[in-house]
Image (tube, rainbow, N blue to C red; front, top):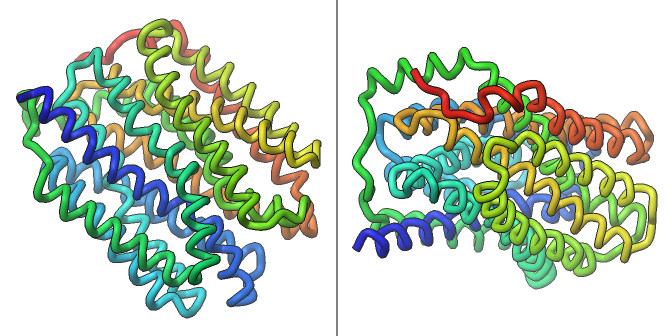
Length: 400
């Protein structure tokens, strides 16, 4: 019975995560017709992507706090309901730049609760030695969404338009929210701690260097992840004059690499690299930075496709390792708050990256050189920031 409950929990969390990541993925394709329809500048396009991540970041701690107080089940349902409503409004009433920004801002609030609630669900239903793989399965949805999302976006944009694409997406997320409310089982493992202990543990954790190193690593890793997600279609259209179906195929291949990387890195790091996670992150980010440079330097479509594939494999390996580390190092009774705060750093990077790229493109008169240098620098720094502590708290759990 417990095995069945855990499988159903993981399946529902997985399905919700796929839809949440698709909502993040398709916006990069939708911005192309939106830019033409409303005659937007690069800065204004960056605002639509950036405002989402700003609200996402600002809502992380409140969402984590609610998760620890109300329980992961309520937060999961609420998060999916808000995402569904905002997707429907974006497609139905998105008739101006200001309204598009308002709806994406609201969507960021909805997205903010899902990662911490999912992490809490994993901590509440899986033993410690199974948590890394379980969480890596959920994070593999980022790759699956990158594989499926571009194909769905291209199909929807060619068959209808971006308005109807978001209406369809909103309907699917609404179905997932209802399914979560009806089918999500109760926690299998007994709850740990009390609210008083959780508050003390959180304050203790905030004073640890490891927490702030992870915060900055999440911030820096997510700058290239979300910047490429938002701007890569525009880059490939401008430089290589590719059509949307071709770009969708390239990004789908990268998504498959992300999915495989998430599953493989979660298993490999959990089994063979315990205590050496900083070195995994460092090597992965260096590989990703070199692959980004290759994407910019070579204008061959084939080279671009395979270098993006390699870049995404390496970036997701670093991201999964960094994201799952707190679940093994911080007390489980306040993991929702910790994950919420750490994820705020990652989402803040998702806000800074696309907006910064918009300004760098405008300053460079359309040239992507400074933008790619900015992304590569962020990637390398993300890999280096945990190394000073690689013999310290990364290798052991934080205890009171």
